[in-house]
Image (cartoon, rainbow, N blue to C red; front, side, top):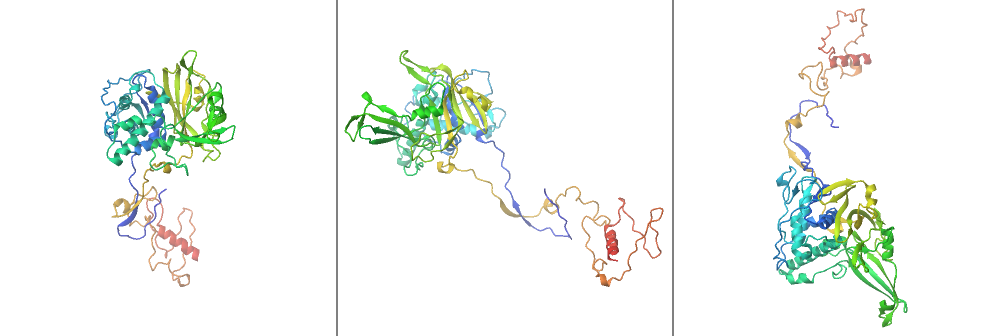
Length: 538
């Protein structure tokens, strides 16, 4: 609470040095508070569900937004002659809100929104523009039409040009690998000043097979030239093979951006991970060629995790090829997954083997087969779970998460996204937002500073010459009896008079006339104080 103090005497107005706090910035919601649905352009739910999961992966979104937008790739796009037809949104449910495609709705100011460019130069640029549009939107809720992203996706890959049902996990892999491809191509152009589109034909299909690892073998930290995908999703698997004849153990490392694990009925993610790292016998037709024995030998093989990723994507293999029917079927098995996970199937010398992961996104498949159905995503943001069903967004309680284990009509969890609890933003290269600082400035006095508004009870009442109720303590004069030493008092002691029957004290001829009291019935404070002190002294 602010305090006011009494001011003695008449002080001149002088320039004052005060601490000036910066003007408060407009309160803007965090990017995590945005709850925007995405329009469906005909079986594009596979993309919408993955895009929502990636947007609410805060490190990925922040690294993407702080990265410079990519220029057009040298040589143009491999499918630059592709002329897409206009995208028409398809809504399975009643319309939630007006969609936005680079324009603003819901009554917000158009100047406050960063529009989505209609013709992005790359898939990386399209994704960045989409996330930037949502994160800077002045509204917290609404619907966005990712038409520019879908058109660019269909432009660079003809597999997504049809309206057929696509696999969300395959799209997730393709998107991340394509981002890596475009970033590396952009770096080649920046370093050498030229590039060839032919290099794109030799691009990666999966990080685990063709992309060289970007991890430093000494401390498992990302190398400076690693991409945002490597920094977040890349982990390292090691395949250990032990020859049963000579006991020689050979190992081979490979990178991964997600783990695909087989599932069983009435199991759990922990049990599936244990089975993932279980020993496998290589015998008969699958014998292992031992370099030490220089011959095919029986061997024991197992997979373990050597380096844990910052963001763990677990793919549950729910679609299995059935040989007797010659088609893929869906395994609607009940597979329980925890909200917090620790991976135990690591090598003995793994760094941070007890690393804790928190579940923040679930891609759910609804339907009976891989070629039809629907995808939704369930996201946890700011402590609350939300269902993102294309353009429909609504919260759900955490106790309803087990409904998506796989044995109900609510859907089956297909891809689980876990983020490490100890993720280091500094090592990832994330820039912290600047904090407001205090500045000191000398400013001339203003009436509000020299004559501040006093709270009730300290306000000036009437003219300051009214001694009956002065606004500040009266300083006694030099000849005042209050300043005379006790031994040098020359005035006679004041006598206390007892009031008469009418309540008025009798007056003696030597006594001065009483000072008239103001309208409030109180005497002068100085007089009362003088009389009380004189009485106490005598």
